[in-house]
Image 1 (cartoon, helix red, strand yellow):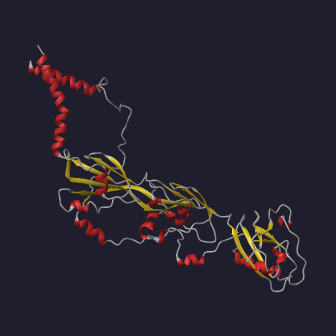
Image 2 (spheres, helix red, strand yellow; image 1 turned 45 degrees about the horizontal axis):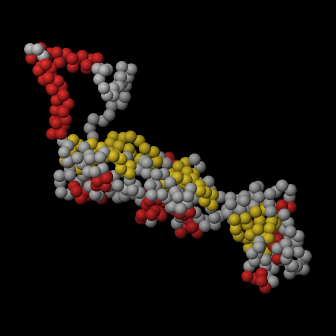
Image 3 (cartoon, helix red, strand yellow; image 1 turned 90 degrees about the vertical axis):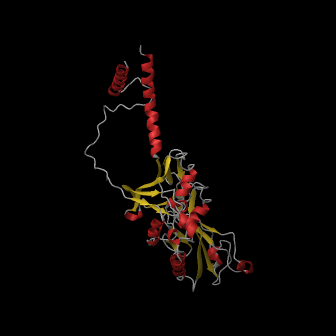
Length: 416
């Protein structure tokens, strides 16, 4: 009778296995229309595991850390001294001609040569040029004593030109203020003996960068006579938000995106990341969505742990996930699996490729491990896996077969 009951139970189990037991509750995926690609490249069968111990840190400390390089032009004393602002359409120029207020003030008196004052001009003298000339309301200190007026403000037309009395229309786009001064001086020298001019840019409207992403005030930032760096642009935008990923700030120039480690500038003063911005640059500050690690396995609360400014230690990640499960975990085997390898590509771009994973193992039963885990730096998208203990695996096996054994036992008791 007992053997007949067992045979009946096994027959029912076999029937369920071969028929997929479609009437049983729970999720089930029909694999009849799935075909595995047997020609796929085989995965490496052997992976070297590096123990996280004192020897690991002694080896890594001996390796020289490569100096960070600036992907573009960065701000240094040399680049600051060489920086020059180039005039563009829409900029405002202020021009002062000393000893000749009639050239820069429509209401001025006669000049030193007795020439009558010129009438106020508008429109730059040529039809449809879009240029305007207006007297500046401010005056220099010398103006109160009968000296020079505050100057004439010229707006650079869309075609990059301005009009100035006695000189005519000249091309100023792409020139510096000093070059415009020399050009006007040469033009006025034909009618004025030894003209002295001062030219300055008072309105910077032709060049700007865009600051987007996880900042307080995303907006366009004007480029002025002072070199604009990525730190300056972020400060003008109100700074980054608390969840911004400053380690992976992007700078897009001419269709190429360059990663900038702004966090290294703030933490260690790494000037080799403080890029000087150009017209049309786009700064994007991402959040910490991609800067995170995964804590899985026999853990109290398996979770995703975000990195703080691109930094997170193994101790931080385990603590954030509630530490290991004291009932089911094996403290001898805690793996850190690193499979995404960032590489510098062409034009400074960073690409990622999946390679044979680097695997590290921590033994928490060792005294020094509790200290070493606070020094082991994680990287973005690392996976921390806490191994299950052998006894816990055995208990889970019993949990799986116990219902079947109980079913067979009660079936035997109910059988006549």
